Image (cartoon, rainbow, N blue to C red; front, top):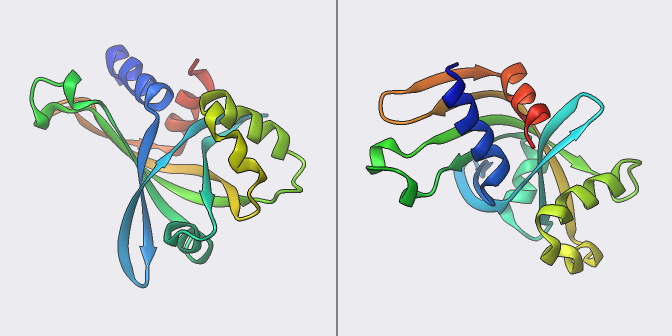
Length: 161
């Protein structure tokens, strides 16, 4: 990957506040919007989302943990819609139990990016999921598409700010 594309990908992963989450719902695709934060711990890296158990996408992730996360550059930053940088990441959705040993670290990581979400931590129907990357398709701009393995995405996450 070109150095400038690596910088762009890191920027998307670190600075964008929301992503599109694709799940399988009653045998059909469902896409919703979720705030996300990058998570790194002891060589593991992925994306944290904090979602309500009442939402369809949460039930979908429990039933079918293969999900997709799409992070998109602001359209204001691209010359044309065809050149909008984006990355679509195939992930495994891993639920995080409220009593998990790493729950405190996960909550602090998420709240660092979204401090306004703190009251939601007290809602018993809200749960963290760690989305573990498996592969990705990164489009750095018009005619600049590439497939990335899990190791490349994890490396980007581990070295991002």
